[in-house]
Structures are given as structure tokens and as C-alpha cells.
Amino acid sequence: MTPPTLAPALEAAAFAAAGAALGMVYLALLRRATPAAGAAGPMRAAALALGRLTLAGAAFWLAAQRGAGPLLALFAGFLLARRLRMRAALRELDAGPRPPAHRGADPGARDAPQDGKRP
Image 1: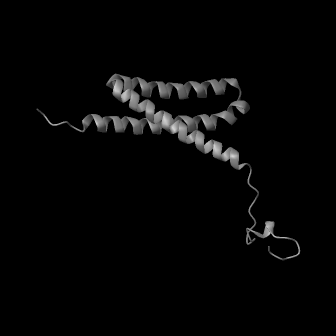
Image 2 (image 1 turned 135 degrees about the horizontal axis):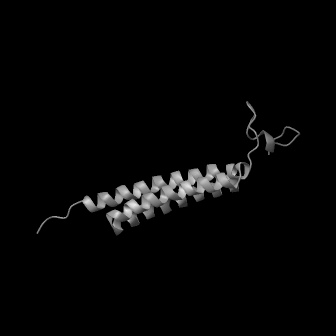
Image 3 (image 1 turned 90 degrees about the vertical axis):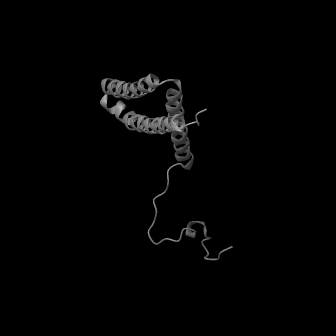
């Protein structure tokens, strides 16, 4: 009986990391292209979308050539990156626009009563 090797686990971890990197790149390109698509017109938006889909499709095709395990690991990494990016985007939306910071101002000074007395 031969001892189990770590090769399949290392391969799955490598594909999961590659999937997370692919997901981050894909979503960064999507975020960058969204405002530009409206300003540049529909042809540029279509070209950017085609480029993103080609990149993702090629990566998934290459993983599928290695088998079901690497394909699933790549997809899991891609979904993890999507979840993390969506969570960060929702936090940004919940925070709303931030007022400009004033140098040297006391952070609690806005909430202080006008008569100078603190509660």
C-alpha cells in the first residue's frame, strides 16, 4: 500500500488561488469598465465585456482540461472572490458619501453643544 500524496490537495489549492485571482481581476475589470461604457459607447462596452468573458472562459477551459477537481477548485476560488468583492461594495454603499476631513479639528467637536459644555 502506498502512502497518500499531497499532490491532489496542492493542485486544488493552487487552482482555488488562481480562481480567486481570476475573480478579483475579472471584477476589477468590470468595475473599471462600467463607468467607461456609458461614456465611450456601446461598442467599447461590448469589447470590454468580450475581453473579460474570453479571459474567464480561457481560464475555465484550461482548468477543465486538467479534470473536474481543478475546474471545481477554480470555480470555488472565483466565487469566493466575487463574494468578498460584493461584500466590500455593499459596505461602501452602506457607508455613503463621507464628509471631507478638516485638519486639526476635534473629531467630536461636531457633536458638542454650542454653549461649550460637554454632556
